Length: 246
Image (cartoon, rainbow, N blue to C red; front, side, top):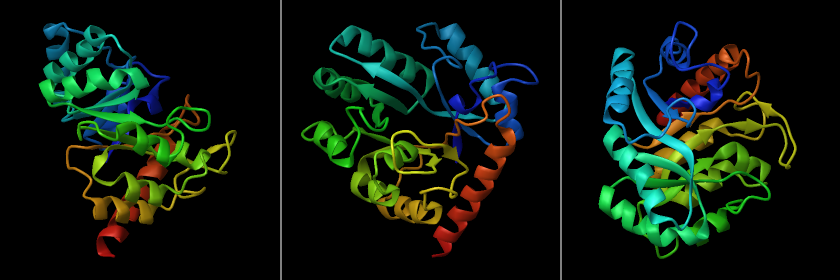
């Protein structure tokens, strides 16, 4: 279990009050970075500096994003080059339909996965069927980062999402909302429409990969999210244990 660093977007990356220290204090070893915490760069020195910071905190990067992709192959490749240099196995992504020819070539060349991120009602990857249709006929390394909270907003069942996206799931944003509608309030996981135990059972069933990005993403209370994040992590840990026993 890791965290999407967007959950700590109100904080910088370094220092005693920085995101890395807060993630360390939470006892987490996997982090999915968003761009402001870890900007995409071709600079090997900057990447080495970040790797040294991560090593100090005994952390690894599970994924990076959400990154956009279009029909500019050269621009797309820069993101893959960064991921490969940084040792990041997954890129969470919002690819335009005209990007897939480029992405097929790049996942083959770099052996880095694309995990398509859904973003709720009105987004091109709104429903389960939208996601499945998008990857049909493409390299299997083009899969999904299922944001279960946004799928709730799209009136989809998170357990069904995991079961149907199956072995093309390379990322999960563990998130919950109070209601299955576009405008609703984010809540502690398990307090809304997220069946935490059911999700973990489904992840076990579909064989979610060990190097996939299983990330808590908590977007509420940005200025002081740690108490809520701790509660979410405790619920996730309990849910995972129940799923393993079941």
